[in-house]
Length: 331
Image (cartoon, rainbow, N blue to C red; front, side, top):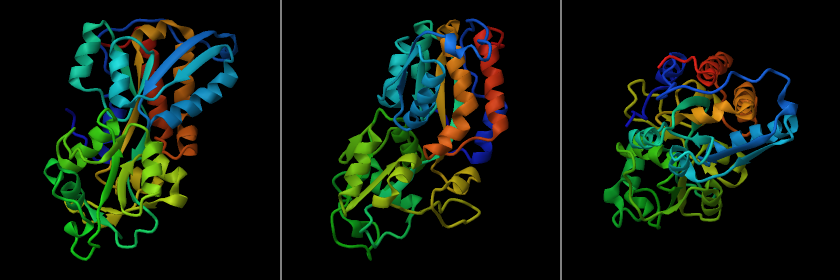
């Protein structure tokens, strides 16, 4: 399992040095010539992360205008659900809010699926409470762990068990379902072990369900991707997170475009990905779509509430994808 608590600098280095190119074998045709999108036909099947969904759907909507005869379908089954379909060859592209696991990669290999991992934006997992909550001004990573670790189940039930000055009232928890990459990332960053948490909380792979839950429950605390907070911030309150393990001692930090970009919102900043099946790159509509995605992900990710990568990183991903789709990438 990769270390999800990478700093922003390490994430950038990993991307710039090409650590995201993962493949078992290469194949496919060269990229479609620019300007030929309107002549394309076919179907592109995409599934996976609900966190990445808004970016991919925004790209798909714009692409449909450029290539009206290409049918792009974007589903939501969570990062884990998407990888299951992807590793069986059922979809062309999967959205992911975490890197592929070794076990998932092995299944793909067994099924003759090779792939490329392409980072497309950054996200800051956002801890939220109801706007009427007037006691939570900030929260530490240790306090979040105390709330969410497996030992908390059936034990940590009230707000004043976290801080004595908080009210003697029930705490109602909302968070990502276990098939979600958001769940994997959050548990690794907060609890210290991926896929490890209490189970007595309202869980969903659909972030809109979590937004609805927290926004209607004054005793709620939840977490999900920054874009869903940004879209609904009129009915939610984001909680500043204090990473007390940070040697630089930055204090409690709110997620924002700036704090995710500069790495001060730790440890809940992360990259977002799409994965592309090598066999799908034999179809020009898929190659054109992925290139269109990388050309427009910066602007569209910001439009839907996420944090774009620097322009040179998108260019680096396009160069790697060109090698991959033409079958010239080094193994």
